Length: 252
Image (cartoon, rainbow, N blue to C red; front, side, top):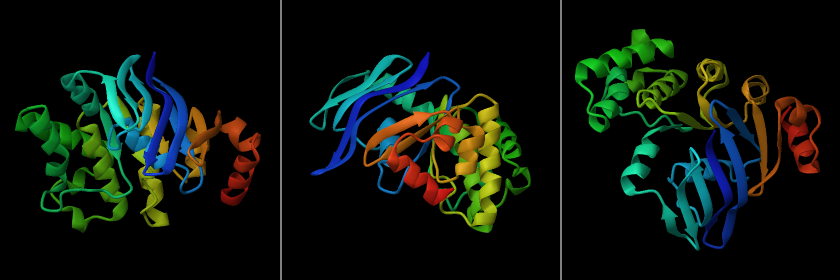
């Protein structure tokens, strides 16, 4: 069963067309890595999936049900508000910037959403937070504050926080681009572990080694369009379009 599917997805900012008829299907348990130059629409696509951006036109399906349909910038069809909200809670999102609450400890950052949104007890939330911090290799930092952590550690906390909501899919928007080079690996390792455990993932990244190693499919976006997609081997070894060839020769 496909987990998420877009049909003719368009997004304009004023007269600027950022996404132009984007069609993508992501199967349950699949890891999709989206690559392409800056300004290709990659982050806007990700933000459209979880409705941080309102799409201009097109359809998004989740688990084969119509999630949202828009025309001329207005939502014209989709799920009930309750179902829509419930499905949004099943999408974890990790951004370039970590967006942690500076006044809360690491453990409290991880446990606050499940307690507030899912009404789970503090005891249960504590237990889950500590399990997740262990998963991302930070159990010893549970009582530290975000400003006492490195960028890589903060990003791993952000991943744990997203996982605390028990999402069915994780969206990663260039999660390593704000990090110093020596800290990138620790975040990618956490993402690799998630992929091995069967998490459905869509990652926008400039890390080509990660794409080669972890992606089931690599999607190349250029100027708001998916120009090509395929297995890492197909796309990296035999890119079909000139734009993909140029892009890959500049980054590999």
